[in-house]
Image (tube, rainbow, N blue to C red; front, side, top):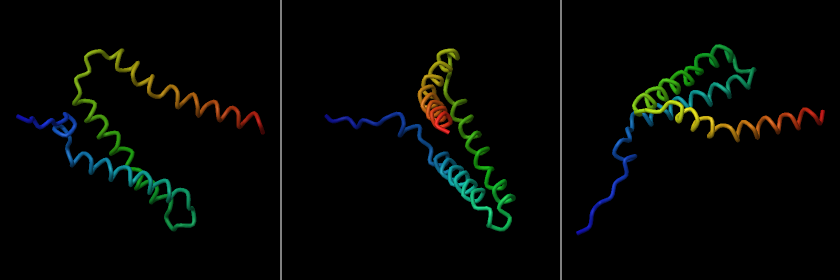
Length: 102
């Protein structure tokens, strides 16, 4: 009588990918913290070591995008531009207004 409704996200979600994303984000945050504080011994070397989180994140993003069937590349690029246009515009305008006040 009642059907259990499950979303595609739950069916296609993989915990190992989520764990790698969390680890890579933690490494990126740790890299920025270590690079900010110069008094930590070996901070330049540690910052470069923990910067591997960026490469892991790019690798995961490439894997996830490769799993999608992108049939219309122009539409895909338009969607990406639409998503980042307004945040970039806001950051750029705030920088310009900040520089003009100096």
